[in-house]
Length: 221
Image (cartoon, rainbow, N blue to C red; front, side, top):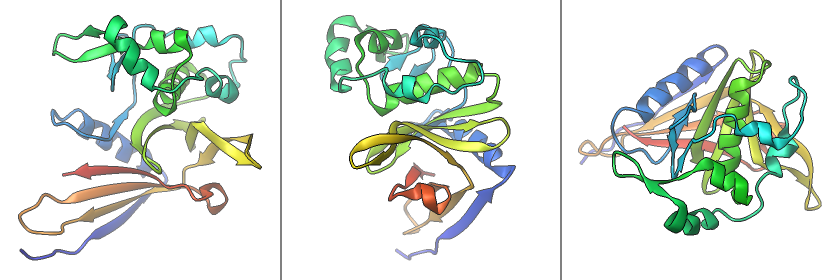
């Protein structure tokens, strides 16, 4: 078995959106992928263990201005750990036509349980309807463990939005994590000739926004 070198390409500027579209196509290519990218959630859309049963559920957050992204409302909408969703599924879930067992997303909202995925889903539903957001993506990837976050174009510039983890000082949440997305570093590694290559996509933000964080996607090509 011979080791082959890696290739590194940085996608930036107007290419970012096109690259995210390509990753979304890969998500729906019929294979199982641990990490996913989705640009549109509609009635019946499936995300992990959830089925979107009410795309208008964001209206239940209460009033917020049309031009105001309700970061703190999303952050505070869920309080319990996501393990509650797994327990509730035993009694409140259902099986889809393709045999997947899932839970209506509105139940997570009603019971106030959720972590990164639930907040990222709600962020995506809001961004899809917001007049200031021209495009948005729900990303299920990695940041110190499996993690869901969003890329939102407001209006034409992309931002990495993490409604689970605001910036903190002395243990207290101080500032929304809405970081300018400057690029995506794409690293393709072929370790051995008889193994499929691996691709890692790292989302790049300005140094002052890194704070020890690294948002990534990993793929087996």
